[in-house]
Image 1 (spheres, rainbow, N blue to C red):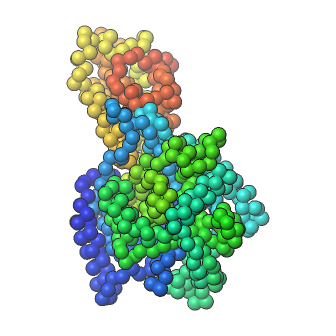
Image 2 (cartoon, helix red, strand yellow; image 1 turned 180 degrees about the vertical axis):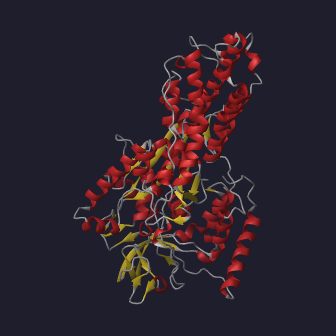
Image 3 (cartoon, rainbow, N blue to C red; image 1 turned 30 degrees about the vertical axis):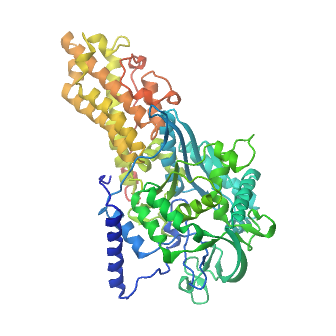
Length: 632
């Protein structure tokens, strides 16, 4: 877990960026450092979408955003990014600005994942942001907030039409099948969205048409000709440096097609200054803060562009109002899924209704590869339509396996369904939710995964619960509160487990609201760690032998009961990350099911736990055998 330090201010951040730019300038032996063209390999994104961004010639100030692999914008932006990934600059984590009542309680939380592109089965990169968003949503529900958790799919575009044709299906049949796969995965992972967004229903189309009309009425949509070499795989017009001889795409190794199209464009350039001003006045709009510096680089005056928002090359999409020869570009369409997904079945499909149902979102959870679309184009579209902007855009890094980018060609893709079926939802949620620092790139290996799960869930927490239950169920004649065994509850005021358990909730709440899930989990597990130390110090098993005194037995029972209360609080704190495990702890203790948990339950209680009396317990969380997975 990365140490939490204060990120250097804007001036320092820019010095870092400039230093990186100068370093690259020297290494390339060039005299100027302009905005060159970049593109990443097709596997650059394993989280959410993948897209390419290509700067167009200065002859046309219009930008064509078609492709599916996002490139790093400039060397300056990359310098900031590398400094964060290498740990020379730590991630700053400000508190989320959430709607609260006068008592400080969270009233509303709307959190979204990317709307995943529906041309293939979900992968671990899809599951990662869904787990993180689910953790945040469950935390909001613990706090009794009105929660709207949105995930879903982006279902239009030429690539989907072609994939469907190759499979001898209609595009609708293809996306319907992919939707089932996503929802089946969410069920396996115990991910529980309140809304599953899809971009093919009629209500979504009505929202898209209204948004288009608002932007048009505001003078922000115009028509323009464009000619270029088009790659269907990238869904992009490629430049010469992106193709091999014969106009072959470097990524897909297929010949591109020369196309001429008259498309509609959105006046992004009109909102350039407004976007920059919004980022400067709201430094927590993009999280982690290092990514804000990257977007500010993109928003430099020399980079000002418009972008295309329609296609004439495919009919699989939402028709442009008044022009059936064009369909609305997949990004303009898909981003509006965040709005249409909030509509209830009985609601009219209007933007005004969306505002009543939870918009604006408090948090967009996205991969760093789709930042440009969410931090520039989406806010500008909302500004044009006179709609409020989301409060925060939280960006996560890429997943790697054994230090290498995941890719089917490398044979190192981690598929989520087999992983969950083999190890269980709680283990997978725990690792991807709390063992990878959200915002930075994270590496998966079976060895690391198994060791972390065994150490924290099997050994530290699971074994502790098993020892407590085994000793109490063998020696406790009836459900008892520890206060029944002392003259005054004040005798427990300085008990280390109680001290840890009463301090933890405030810290854990702060961490969840900073999207610092690893620190939230570590703080919760500290209660179990303190209890394990206390267990070894007191040695209650020795004090509960037949030959020991009544006083020793009384002490041992008191200690175990206090430890059990600490574990109960730990289970509540962990429930957003490991809901199944927390529910099992509550069931073993004879308490209400997980669905009835609330943050109020993190307060210390002397209530009797009926489940501490009963038959010999079974292990709560089985250790995973590492040997079969070594080297895989």
